[in-house]
Image 1 (cartoon, rainbow, N blue to C red):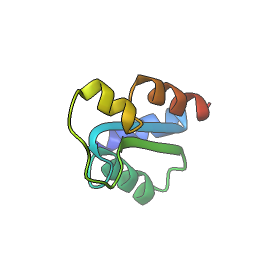
Image 2 (spheres, helix red, strand yellow):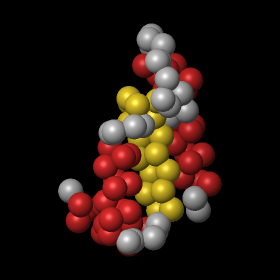
Image 3 (cartoon, rainbow, N blue to C red):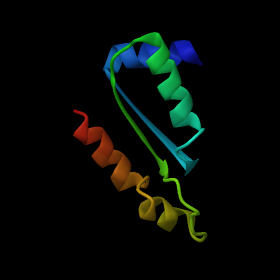
Image 4 (cartoon, rainbow, N blue to C red):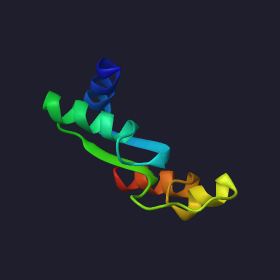
Amino acid sequence: DKEAVLRAARATKRIVTVEDHSVYNGLGSAVAEVLAESGVRTGFRRLGIPDIFPAYGDPLKLRDKYGFGAKAIIAAVKSML
């Protein structure tokens, strides 16, 4: 929903996306494209699995391992304030 992304970007001046798969070609990439093509200037961070072959196991542990668990999300948001 491009308009929802742009409304949020204009209202908050910050966008953080979180996805439980690769950060490439996912939600974060789609949001980045919308922001870049619109010309709206905003802080932007995307959290998810980096460009690697990830391990498998307990989802909560993997989120922490790859930097998109609850603590990482809070840190990302705080760093943008």
